[in-house]
Length: 203
Image (cartoon, rainbow, N blue to C red):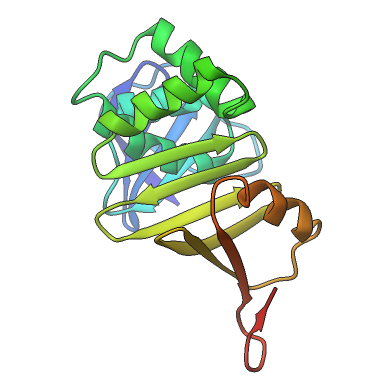
């Protein structure tokens, strides 16, 4: 796949391709207009890691840069980037803010300071919400009324109805009881649905 450098912010580079835009984290600065081949093998003048794309809709490069400072997980970088884009409209995202956010992201709501910071983030995050409970990360799209839970290597989609949380996944989740018990601290009822099973299974 080939792409042309269309924009850059520090070491974050946006490439225009026939399949949509791709964002990579580069080992060195690329000039605008440069045509590059994106490949997994072989030698090249530049080395990088794909963070997002190909996609027709991507957040700003500075939001992606902030996210790449928090985690290298591609799925989480994408979700955090849209969150940071919303936050940047209402709060200054500087080194101090990112330090507090990384602590919240990694540790979750383990103490009063983190709980207060989490509430602060969600108060200012517009369309997108985010909660961290250590290993459990929850991203909310308030406009679409959807959320995604990242738990270890599992991705779970679902929705909140009042005091209940309903999750759906396509595979059996290891340590499911651990997840349920953690969520029961914050919700009255926790329902888990396994999709693509005949009739569905609820736990």
